[in-house]
Image (cartoon, rainbow, N blue to C red):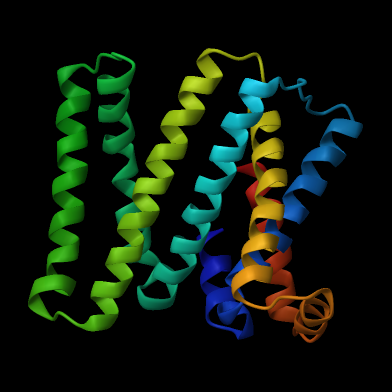
Length: 221
């Protein structure tokens, strides 16, 4: 998934991130609904409270994916993966604060080691050979990390108080993210159906495959 997004951000779609989000999530929603029709997965109906949760979750998903795209434009895949690894201790410590989940000392120590390793990895970029590219990349990677942690914690809270399946949560969130991206594109990037059709109609085979694979991958995450 990360490698596919990196390939997309190195091509003509880098300037149209909102449209990449639309197509990826549309592919993912199609795959999930196909799985439901085939009887492989199931969705539960949502009430008004849950709908508000999914709208917020979708907005955070858009922020998460957009910041990931920008970070991948400025940083190697390995670096963005190391920063994302920080989500493990951050989510665990957030659960401790919000939900009172207790962590044994061994897991606390493991989380601290992950944090220390990521900081040591980043030190060379930010201190040893600092550049505006690295600083920009790390800034967006940090925003991505915060959005991811927020979504993971909200999903954890929702799963603990709802009968909705994980596939259902993914489908509703990704479906709601599509109009959010379209509105943002229309308001700030003058996106129209004709411009979107022209952009994706002119894609070469490699970028088209990357878009398809990342869309399917989004359904499986």
